[in-house]
Image (cartoon, rainbow, N blue to C red):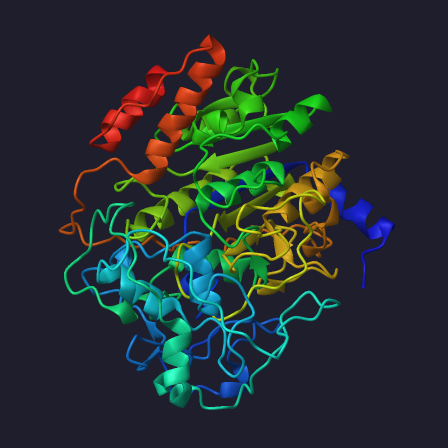
Length: 543
């Protein structure tokens, strides 16, 4: 049932500001799969209450019985990460495979569907991680030989894959048979490409089945329970970081599936706001120059408009306090600090540091005069190879009718589920939010929300087709309680050290700065080699 215009107008009056905080590379199940499931603590829990919120909302979480096979066909069950483990906040102990090829292997066991009839999807996560642990490849797996099938796995009239298998069937015997092994067989790939920077001692293939619990992530879980969690929110592209961030800002990745380009020329939500006399802000923790500033070329190549900001997280706090007459912009995008000792939560960096940053953002906004008219959103750019049990739906609208990648991907399928939490005093605690429309939530749903709030035109066909999230604001009066009162963020084991290196996203930001320099000067500079994030950040702040 669609929301009426009268209801929409009422919802719009409640919100004057939207703040989005986007973290990195974690799947929904990995971070929130056990949110409403206490069976990992109490085996005698009433099963009827598992994955149901206090409001009675059904929640697409984990049962605890989900499995994935390894290369020998042995099934590995999901498990709760022990917060007392030395590496609890560095799971899954090394960076899993990400990107379009890895994602399709994790989901379908091949480059493209259809996948093998009779074998459940989402069964390639352990094998993909196992291959990377064994240094069988660095980066994406090679193309896999397709196998002819007489069964169609998709319905042209549906937005989701057909279930071509019996959910009650015991698939463990499928993992052992020759047909299954042949289906996943691939040639030895080249051993060049992305360097594996850190692999903690004792890393095992089944580490990818480790899931955080409310005990281990009290801040994210507390916000998800205390306000609204979206249990069917998907990243926009079944691939890696930069294309998904492009969809977050522009509703398109300009046909790119990988991180091969570091800045985008498509019109951004920031330019869209400026063109229609609305304000924006881009802030990054511990950095004076957010990556988004150079990532969106129409931001970097134009003077910052009046009442708009690019700066550090400390600058954001000053804006909230009204320093020098500053006012909170209509839309704010917050970045974490990147790199191995940042708080982006990218595997296998410190997840607890992200919890601390998340809490500080929440408290800062809640204690400001803007709390009651702000929608705060916490989301993640992509799943980063972490396990999720839900197969992403088909039926995504391409940014334009002609959008297609060189691999033949038409941007008509969503990526893997990622966490998205909606925070506002106008939201009931215990809300499990799903759109009322036919199109599932993805990053462009947040663009649609901003566009509907501020009467902006859409950017592409993707955000035009998206649903906003305004109907999550169901309360007649704003709440006064604080769900996180007295809750402290976790702290990771200080003895865990990651080798000093220049992380991939910091190098990407440096490349984006080089792109800007070349556009400004008409030169053909190349980005220097960096051996640490400090070196890369020094270059970024000089550019």
